[in-house]
Image (cartoon, rainbow, N blue to C red; front, side):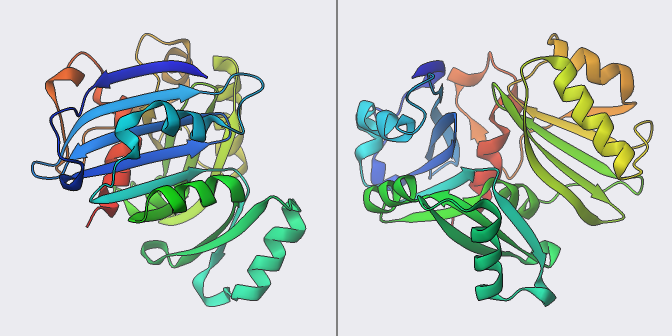
Length: 275
């Protein structure tokens, strides 16, 4: 397991008055602990899997962080998994979509989850590793589970008539959400190893969806900054590009002040599910 960052601490925080936010994927896992009283992130960590431990990264992080083994007021989990289908609500049938996902992806070690995203009149149906879901369900009785796509779509953002593309970066992959004519056109995770990979997928998507890259609004979040090769490539091809800002009244403690706020966009979005 490789540590990308560890920021802050929650030593003085009563876990019963704290919220735990977790995002877990095939090659990474990250968490944030939120002081519920003032809705402030006080601690966060981001880790990636080494070559042979990606199946155990979630368990390793929970086992190695004593602060994650408490009983929290609430736990919100986002599954960053690529195997999904989206179905318009009017066509959704539970048994049919369950069988469809199983037949398309055909993995016996997964469970199929269906969740409604009423803001977009659709259902997101996806695979979740059974071991990970079982671990989280046992450890966090107050767990609330969502797919990362659903979390992004549940968050409001200003829609542009010419279209919106939202990209959220991890260390070796990124989510792309493409919106055109106020309808979801694409929600997908893409791997990448260099900046040109990112540019290829973005330009290809815009071309296939007839989205003009000179007019679409591109919102960037996650582990990327203005000095990165990725951003420099994007800046050459997209006219309307911005970094995500802090949302949903959540705050960052002083330990985070030296980091760009868009690094933590996944947590802002997860926080909208806190009740």
